Length: 247
Image (cartoon, rainbow, N blue to C red; front, top):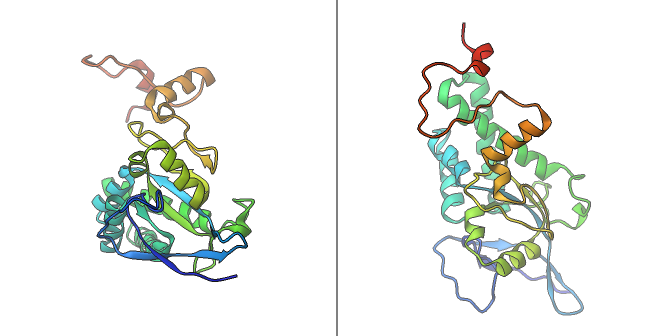
């Protein structure tokens, strides 16, 4: 067995798609951890978990004025289309600061919304990284320096820029499990994958308001909802919302 270290560019989701294609990126190179060469001479990857997000997440991190460090990571997530596990420790440390800051200062109004998104993201990523029971093949997953499972953040728009075959090869080669943030924007075509397993919407309509209205109707449950034709002028609060008026 032979241990090899291979460097590659961290381009927007075009990593290792086709070996004969020349890809030029200005982003810094990162080392991709690999397992030893097997008897067949092929280098096998230690796979990771892929967390799929869309541009609304990067917008919240950049617009929220939460911390300068988070803005820097958000720019990378948007422009590169990926935040690799090698940067995850620094990213989670910045999210921890936001969690502590919200507890000590107490955000209000619109700022509270940004804080809540950042805190929820922090808890979600911590759960995915350090929950050994999440994936039945966790022993075969790539491990981060702090002992957690290797986790990459992947932007859906960048994946959608690839053709279907290339996207499938990329995901199957590098990831054992895909988890989508919720909700994804209904304008984004979600990634559909059987291998690796995908925990998320199978079609874009699942993330739309129409699907929510259908669920409320079929289950006879959910928040009070009213479908109003575009251009309609409401002169008074509809009766369905009367119980929820401010005193």
